[in-house]
Image 1 (cartoon, rainbow, N blue to C red):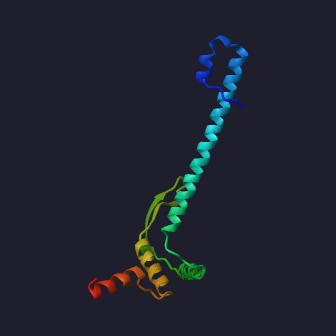
Image 2: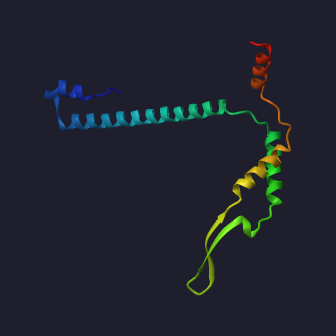
Image 3: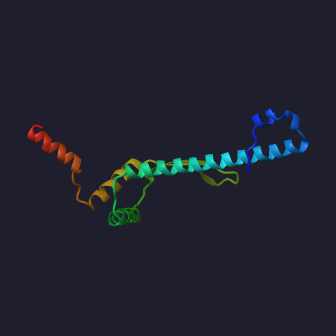
Length: 143
């Protein structure tokens, strides 16, 4: 299928007819749709490559390790007990004279995060990464 462009139309002005212009417009619209499809495919390819790059930079985690972390968090959360001191509560009087909670804020999130991390750390033997060990050996050898 021959692609008709604006330049082709200008070159052949004496051949202009309503039918030829309609065909030209249709072809240009098809060209635009093809270009949009190509742009979409390229954008999808870019997004795929970006995700692949992000994955390359992630540290590895085995399924067994992930299962241990998941179980540890589940056990920790299952044993949680809250008290009034963990929350800031603002009460209001409702329309039908019932006391209602207007605002509720959890104050112990930092403590909870620290507790969860300690609980998870207990499940593993923490070792230095190889690159850090290699750097220490080089440093000890004076390299």
